[in-house]
Each structure stands twice: as structure tokens, then as C-alpha cells.
Length: 324
Ligand code: XMP
Image (cartoon, rainbow, N blue to C red; front, side, top):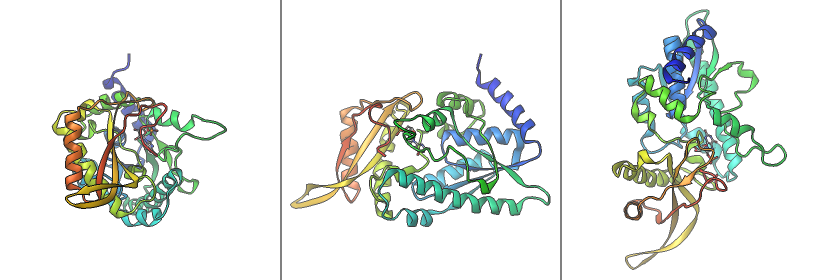
């Protein structure tokens, strides 16, 4: 019988045996998966686990600071890396979703490469970090290999598939046999910060795939503000914990509105909230109209640049959770 306690015990023992005195480098995302994987690794090898957390400029509002703080409180050996400019520069003018994913994945590897060189320099004489830690879970693997026609992946999850050869790091993925709910149970056993444990999943490319069309700093700012209002209202109303994943999507259209005597021509955001077990299938959540009304009013009144809010009532399949 699977229990989270026995999983922790056997995994920590296996990691100790596999890793010996080696050092491991790991990029954390602020999400449940990479955090729980890191805490397991830390149990096994302590500060020989070297983590960093990249701000690609596509995180939620205030997320970089909050997550870094909770990692430090959990005793993880972690550094924050601000790489916003690099990502915005590389993404400028790019509209095609898979290309955005590839650029974000590629820029991430560049940042990762630099950060791991910096970490290597700081290691004691004679030691070398030979391993890359990853928070890959079972559904990531399935979805990356599933095909929809001749060899076309449904979506290229950029955290699967490892790194280019030149990095020569071996990959350690302690959660790759688990589903999301099992990862949460393991995290609870490991005393992971409940704020991180109960967080909705958030895609690696972040708001980059929630801004349809091209990305720029202004759109990121607008989306962050709207999304912050949405998520705060979900939390205050008790709906956040009843929803598997929620997010706000910035649409590449403008629509006509009216403010006072003025005609406006501004952007539209869509709100998405789904229930799911593992992200493979999902149903849209019937949020109360009163709550949707409150959120819509708050967004339109407080976020300059948005004059219309819509609610996504599609389930997966045939829609996907993300819009890109
Ligand atoms: P979809 O949109 O495929 O999403 O129904 C299923 C789950 O996967 C997340 N997702 C991603 N996660 N990199 C990630 O790390 C990605 O490129 C990516 N695309 C989707 C999505 O947020 C949902 O939880």
C-alpha cells in the first residue's frame, strides 16, 4: 500500500544511495512539484542541494518575493535570479504559442547555464555538481509523449526532456511516478509551507502563455493586476481551495466600452477556473454569479487598460486548461 510516509522514507534512502557525496543543482518554480522535490533532495543531501529561483518577468504579482521568502523559511539553500530583461527581449514580437514556449525554455536554459556555472565556482575544491534536480511528475511525462497526429506533441512541456548535451548533468526526478494529489500528500508529510502546497499549478512559461499574442511589459503589468484581484477574491471567498487551477488570460483583442461620457477601446481579460484531479481532464467551475460580478467590477474599475471581463465555460477536452 502506498503511503506518503513510506514514499518519503524509501525515496530519501534511494537518493542518498544514488547521490552519495555529489552536489545537485535545481531550479525551483514556486510550485508544488519542484518545491516538494527539492525538500526531498534536501532531506537526502542537505546543503549539497543548490537551488535557484528565476524571475522571468512572467510570474504573478509579488510572487518572486513571496516565494523566495517562504523557501528561505523552509531552510532551502536558494538564490533568486532576476532575468526579466532577457526574457522580454527575446520574446518581443513573438506570437506563436509553441515558439513562445521554445523561447522561454531556451532563455531559461541560458539563465540556468549561467547560474550553474556560478554555483560550480563556489563549490569546495574537488567537488562538482553532476546532477540536475527536477520536479517532473507522471502526467508531465504522459502528456509530452502523447501524440495527436504524426509525431506532434500536444504541447511541449518545457520542463520535460532535460537539458542540452553540453551541460552533461544527470537528471534526478524524485516525483516522476506520482500524480499531483500524491505530491501534495508527500509535501504535507515533509512539512512544506501550506501556502506553497495548496497553490494552484502554474505553468513554467507563466503568464507568457496567458498573454495571447505578443508579450510586452505593459501587458504583463495589466494581467498581473487583474489576476491579483481574481486570485485575492477567490481566496477571500473560500473558493481558491475548491478550485484546482485558476488564472486570468489577456486576450489579443480590444473592445468598445463606455466610461462616463467617453467611449473606450480597451483590452479584454478572460477568467478561468477548473476542477481536475491531474490536469489531464478538467471541468469549468460554476463560480457564483455574485462573486464573478464583484471580480469583474473590481478589475474594470481598478485596472487601467481593461474594459471587459469574460468567463471561460469550456472543459478539457476538447478545450485545454491554458489558452495557448
Ligand atoms: P493544458 O493547457 O495542457 O494544461 O490543459 C494542463 C496543465 O499543464 C500546465 N501547463 C504547463 N506546465 N509548462 C508547464 O510547466 C507548460 O508549457 C505548460 N502548459 C500547460 C497547465 O497550467 C495545466 O496545469
